[in-house]
Image (cartoon, rainbow, N blue to C red):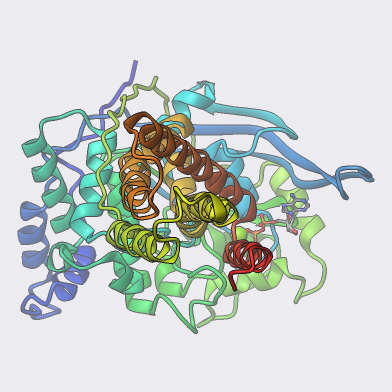
Length: 531
Ligand SMILES: Nc1ncnc2c1ncn2[C@@H]1O[C@H](COP(=O)(O)OP(=O)(O)O)[C@@H](O)[C@H]1O
Ligand SMILES: [Mg+2]
């Protein structure tokens, strides 16, 4: 059995190119470029060996006759099937940086989602992991997916974000985790900004942090969706400039050379980036038009009578061919691949291992002070407004108004922070959940439990002020009952807030709810003749 553990030691940044890029970004003295390149490479590699990463087995992924179709139309009137991927076969091996290329809409993201196991229904064909049929759960635990838009919690610093990841994924001692985090941050050139909030990082740093977060448990398979292109934009306008793109791709390459299988979709790389890939898998209209070594692409196309002009980026050329700029050549290219004219190299495979992460999240609540203060202030205001009306029988309607307002306030005070903040957190949650940092249950429990103290303390503080100021009956049991009702209302409202936040995914609903509550209060106050 050719089982081969990922070398925890040997997967430091290999190529001098990355080391250079990282060293430059760090603000270190730029070395003399041409002659001393090798020296710098050795120096950096020495400093950046990952000796604390957990050992994992390397993984080869093979897919045979993979097809994928979706049902089209709205759910009540499905018209038919649309085939997004047709008959894809190939093998992605360890130690390779694999680029999935193709024109926009060719099915690159779809293909990668299927390989990563994010989509399954509608898929035909077989996916083999180290020669055995893929077991989804195990596979998801040994792979990670770095999305196009890096969703990071904006208020955490780089170091805090890394520690959260390490705490969630590893069960080592705290010191080991700290050393590991330092090691990864040094290797990825993020040490200089370790105390910077993630919201303030540059595009390249964000991408490297996204990689660093997943690197903590040393996944043998890493998927990247358009790592050089920011979501919703072209690489030219915002996000990564060519130097940052180069850093990211270099980093992926060195990760691959450490024994991992790195699969990355890339829309249209520059010639320099293009050459850094080991293997290409080029798609057009959901079918494969080329698979194999990068260096084979031009000779292969030449063999089919397609001559790439000299000084022309081969990546641009193949995209142009696929998009039909030289006539509709796709059927011919599909046939050539089907007839086995280009075959990817096949290597031996080995079984897999997996690791179990230990959950233990920490993160400071942001709105807490404000919430506490608002309960005190509103409590005092309401207390003054309804001062000593509790034991006056002629003011019984005012007393109902007071109770109604109190419940409404407590409900919205518990509901609004959740409705407003949850949609913002959801993208981060999705990324972490899909990368198997924790389960949905764990997230829900942690989120609810973390909020429980405030959902209890705030209503109790509010009740203590209002109950006595408004002169309600001075009986302990009544006061306790009132406080308990208020707390229960707050807890229910919080869950309701999560539901609304999850369903709406927009701040719009939060605003509407706010307007509703104001309208409700105004209506009640007018009806009581207190306006
Ligand atoms: N759920 C879906 N239903 C219908 N069409 C889809 C669905 N998902 C993706 N597509 C279509 O599949 C094609 C490939 O999409 P995608 O994989 O995102 O392309 P890209 O290569 O740009 O990443 C696109 O034409 C897209 O419109
Ligand atoms: Mg895409």
